[in-house]
Image 1 (cartoon, rainbow over the protein chains, first blue to last red):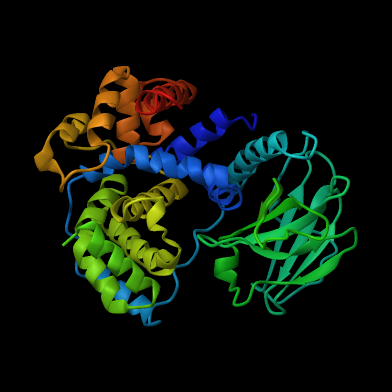
Image 2 (tube, rainbow over the protein chains, first blue to last red):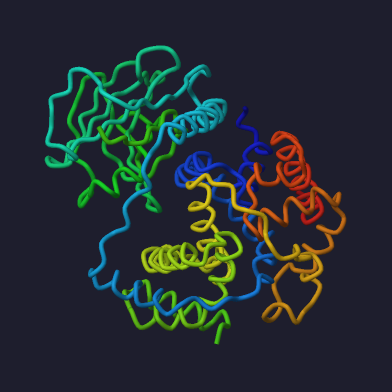
Length: 242
Length: 183
């Protein structure tokens, strides 16, 4: 429950080993993309354990595999559907990200005591959208008002961000990122005190969006100068289909 | 065929969108990566789906591969292992025990016939694994090579999950200390 290097290194080791749960893995994927120390720790363990992968005996895959790859490259195949979310998975994700977020806060700028929950279900006050076209992430402080409400309008290509309990440390800005599966984080913009509508990354498709994570990092005033998140990540949330 | 120089060239060509290079990489590496995936995702059809996804990931991420960060084969194996583990963890189902007798993976590390060429750091890893407490070592090797989750290890050793976690952490810390005594 601390940001010390040993804790990070053991999480990296278990990530490489494969013994983290699905949600802990998702949290590590995000942490890798925003924290070079974590990425280095993961690479270090990949290198240490790689000889074990070298001795696993080869096996011949069926010929359908290459045919499917080729078809996918040519755009003939539909993208695989994302795994359906279920309550257990979401609760587990919330627990893991909470633990992980504590780690980030311990190492970073915000006071400890923040927690993240993700809710399934209806949220009052949102205008009805076309079925299947709107998504919502609730990023919450433990037992209190949510930190942020993010509702995604896929048809319009925008994210409506409504700060509720999110607070930037003095002299810092909070910046919202979208991290697609296996992709570098894309900045959606700096979060102020007012609700605002931010454009989504280009070519965001609903299936892809729900695979990714939203994250909020602490950055210098006005946002990251580099285009990549530089500060600790203080909130994360995953999209849930309304 | 699978030397580093060839793989590096193919990955660079894939990064430029060369489909033929992806096919050549597939032909050179698919049996190896499928072996890795199949040990973790033991259902063959599901493992083939994972393998398909692995090569699409390679296609997408070849441009971000940095040769300075490591040799190509470990990079490819890491993508394959990560995809396989992601899939079995997301399903959340506990896989049945391996029907065949457990492999002695540490023993295999000692046998040069069991792997292609020299694998960097293999002798050091074998020596350091051999020094670990037997149970800690077996947990690490079963997790890495066969995709055992904490829960599956807990069932295998009839111990609480937290005990397994402690074993893993102790074993991994000792392994790091042995491989990199100065660190």
